[in-house]
Image 1 (cartoon, one colour):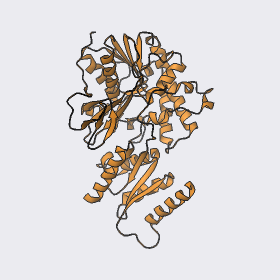
Image 2 (cartoon, helix red, strand yellow):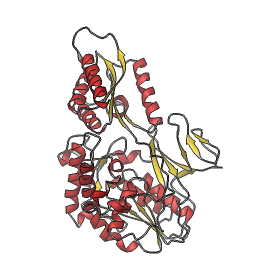
Image 3 (cartoon, rainbow, N blue to C red):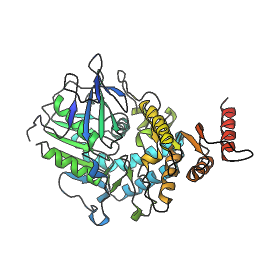
Image 4 (cartoon, helix red, strand yellow):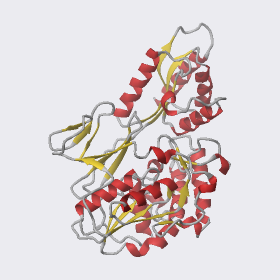
Length: 440
């Protein structure tokens, strides 16, 4: 098929007429202004609400049980062992309490590697001298290491080095920031564009990767998108929308996923026997970093899991996951404003924040699913931040969860008077005191 400049994606670079949420800095880099102030980026892609429909769960009777056409292939239909590897990833994610050690990450990476092996066998032939490969940093780097250790990728001369940062705006819209560097684009005239990534929820990262390749390399005739788990709706939309723009895209994954949450994380379904809110694999990128070298003999991908010199990523500083305990049902406008301002400041600093009123469906008739969602969030959190109110019964329940998980606490605000004698607020003070003594 012939390539056209038309694209289903809307992108901005230096010199373009910019929307009001983008500012151009000296040197032509863009910063997302207003609610996030993220960047700088060499380009920003705006998907607006294009992916909203992908959030709806695929009914069980509509789930694929075989590959739907010649453009979409999931290897689980020919290799049921992939399902077992995925169950291991789900259970490891459910066990996680945050701050995983090297043995946990080794177990996680081993299961993910196992899920990719049939995919590697399926796609090995496309990794030839006429193919350019984009494994978006940082999760894609781990996948590239797996393909290198299996001998599918030889050398680094045909690898693109680009970081993509997905940004969920407060209005539900999606942006993707692009971070390029001096060795982002190999000097070649490829015929095939390959995009490698760990998973795919919404198809935004894959679409940005295709667009970057096709604008840089007009010689490319077809694209191959290769991931492990991916949403059924995302794979379908990716192939269809690019096909509508005369771009031939073939998709290969390990297993189709029927559901993702409002923050675009893959989820298990309740008819699979999992509690509501159970994430399919969790945050792969956070667990895909290089292990200590003594793992190399049992984790052959590990020695390849590095970036070459000259590649600088925007995530060099460790990203924190923060869970907020706060009143929700009885929250006042002033209290919610303080919570939202705290959330905004932390997210502007690059951290991931769980703000209960914003991030959890409060229409739950019993509150059970809310409690499960908070438990899941706290398991993954590096820190639990507290806006304390003695009148908030839900906060008392959440404090019990944080205590049981031994989470690091930070008290930001106490609303109302501190009662005399023992009480929850005194327990918080004592936990924080003991944590500070232990860290000194």
